[in-house]
Image (cartoon, rainbow, N blue to C red; front, side, top):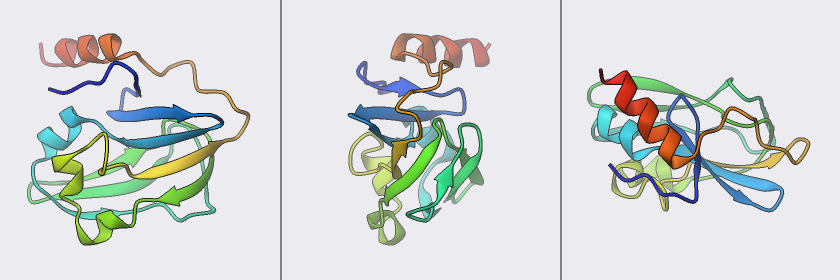
Length: 129
């Protein structure tokens, strides 16, 4: 399982990359691997508001559909429209070309409940027991 150290993670298996007052969000390698081959992605609308813990997207595989929950609060400033034609980018490169949305943080702060890579890996190990 690939878990980049420079990212932060949510308990719902989303990752966050900070870029100034904005963040890029996607689903983790663990999540995409659990879902299997993705065949459809419903993206958030650019300009919409997202709230930490609330629904923002759907990823659908041949096995299941899964809701994605925003790890941050703010305004969606970009959505990865390449995923509409090629949802498999999430499987191939979850932390790069498979990003889902970019959000301008509401107050410039990240939620306190985001985890480091080490904490996220530990959470997954505990869930598996």
